[in-house]
Image (tube, rainbow, N blue to C red):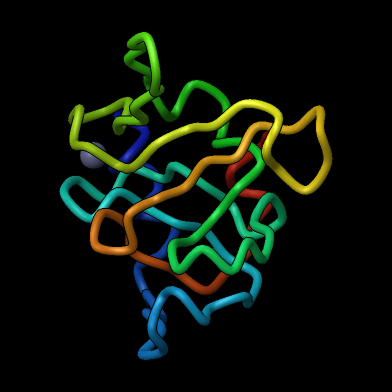
Length: 118
Ligand SMILES: [Zn+2]
Protein backbone atom coordinates (compact mmCIF):
# COMPACT_ATOMS: atom_id res chain seq x y z
CA UNK A 1 0.00 0.00 0.00
CA UNK A 2 1.18 3.48 -0.77
CA UNK A 3 2.82 4.97 2.31
CA UNK A 4 0.64 8.09 2.39
CA UNK A 5 -2.53 5.99 2.15
CA UNK A 6 -1.27 3.79 4.97
CA UNK A 7 -0.70 6.90 7.02
CA UNK A 8 -4.19 8.18 6.34
CA UNK A 9 -5.75 4.82 7.19
CA UNK A 10 -3.97 4.77 10.54
CA UNK A 11 -5.32 8.18 11.41
CA UNK A 12 -8.96 7.87 10.40
CA UNK A 13 -9.88 9.92 13.44
CA UNK A 14 -7.51 12.75 12.65
CA UNK A 15 -7.08 15.22 15.46
CA UNK A 16 -5.69 18.17 13.60
CA UNK A 17 -4.43 20.80 15.93
CA UNK A 18 -6.01 24.21 15.77
CA UNK A 19 -2.88 25.74 17.21
CA UNK A 20 -0.60 27.50 14.81
CA UNK A 21 2.05 25.08 13.67
CA UNK A 22 4.87 27.36 14.80
CA UNK A 23 3.82 27.03 18.44
CA UNK A 24 2.96 23.33 18.20
CA UNK A 25 5.29 21.08 20.21
CA UNK A 26 2.96 18.18 21.06
CA UNK A 27 3.86 14.59 20.13
CA UNK A 28 2.88 13.77 16.60
CA UNK A 29 3.73 13.80 12.95
CA UNK A 30 4.14 16.55 10.40
CA UNK A 31 2.76 15.69 6.99
CA UNK A 32 3.17 17.33 3.61
CA UNK A 33 0.21 19.68 3.20
CA UNK A 34 -0.09 18.84 -0.49
CA UNK A 35 -0.26 15.03 -0.31
CA UNK A 36 -0.45 14.10 3.42
CA UNK A 37 2.78 12.10 3.22
CA UNK A 38 4.47 12.01 6.68
CA UNK A 39 7.75 13.91 6.48
CA UNK A 40 8.81 14.89 10.04
CA UNK A 41 8.15 13.74 13.62
CA UNK A 42 7.88 15.81 16.77
CA UNK A 43 10.77 14.02 18.48
CA UNK A 44 13.15 15.58 15.95
CA UNK A 45 11.79 19.10 16.30
CA UNK A 46 13.69 21.76 18.20
CA UNK A 47 13.07 25.36 19.13
CA UNK A 48 15.13 27.49 16.78
CA UNK A 49 13.37 30.83 17.31
CA UNK A 50 13.66 31.45 13.57
CA UNK A 51 9.91 31.58 13.03
CA UNK A 52 9.66 28.34 11.05
CA UNK A 53 9.34 24.79 12.40
CA UNK A 54 12.83 23.32 12.73
CA UNK A 55 13.94 19.69 12.77
CA UNK A 56 17.29 17.92 13.08
CA UNK A 57 16.26 15.34 10.47
CA UNK A 58 13.30 14.10 8.47
CA UNK A 59 11.58 10.73 8.53
CA UNK A 60 13.97 8.41 6.70
CA UNK A 61 13.63 8.73 2.92
CA UNK A 62 10.56 10.97 3.28
CA UNK A 63 12.31 14.08 2.02
CA UNK A 64 14.39 14.64 -1.09
CA UNK A 65 17.09 17.26 -1.48
CA UNK A 66 18.25 19.57 -4.21
CA UNK A 67 21.75 20.89 -3.78
CA UNK A 68 23.06 24.18 -5.09
CA UNK A 69 26.24 26.08 -4.30
CA UNK A 70 24.74 27.93 -1.37
CA UNK A 71 21.60 26.16 -0.26
CA UNK A 72 19.93 22.76 0.12
CA UNK A 73 16.24 22.66 -0.73
CA UNK A 74 14.02 20.07 1.00
CA UNK A 75 11.07 18.66 -0.91
CA UNK A 76 8.40 16.06 -0.19
CA UNK A 77 9.64 12.61 -1.18
CA UNK A 78 6.18 11.68 -2.43
CA UNK A 79 4.88 14.66 -4.41
CA UNK A 80 8.02 16.84 -4.71
CA UNK A 81 6.36 19.89 -3.15
CA UNK A 82 8.76 22.41 -1.68
CA UNK A 83 9.07 22.05 2.12
CA UNK A 84 11.92 24.34 3.11
CA UNK A 85 15.68 24.43 3.40
CA UNK A 86 18.42 22.46 5.15
CA UNK A 87 21.49 23.94 6.78
CA UNK A 88 24.49 21.86 7.84
CA UNK A 89 26.12 22.30 11.25
CA UNK A 90 23.52 24.77 12.45
CA UNK A 91 21.18 22.55 14.47
CA UNK A 92 21.02 22.25 18.25
CA UNK A 93 24.65 21.22 18.16
CA UNK A 94 27.38 21.65 15.57
CA UNK A 95 27.01 18.12 14.15
CA UNK A 96 23.32 18.46 13.37
CA UNK A 97 21.51 19.50 10.29
CA UNK A 98 18.77 22.07 10.59
CA UNK A 99 15.67 21.48 8.51
CA UNK A 100 13.99 24.89 8.43
CA UNK A 101 10.50 24.11 7.13
CA UNK A 102 7.91 26.50 5.74
CA UNK A 103 4.89 26.29 8.09
CA UNK A 104 2.57 26.61 5.08
CA UNK A 105 3.98 23.41 3.55
CA UNK A 106 3.20 20.98 6.40
CA UNK A 107 0.28 19.91 8.57
CA UNK A 108 0.59 18.69 12.13
CA UNK A 109 -1.23 15.56 13.28
CA UNK A 110 -1.30 14.83 17.01
CA UNK A 111 -0.47 11.21 17.62
CA UNK A 112 2.22 8.63 18.00
CA UNK A 113 5.46 10.03 16.65
CA UNK A 114 6.89 6.48 16.44
CA UNK A 115 4.84 6.00 13.26
CA UNK A 116 7.62 7.84 11.48
CA UNK A 117 10.10 5.10 12.42
CA UNK A 118 13.24 7.16 12.08
ZN1 LIG B 1 3.84 15.76 -0.64
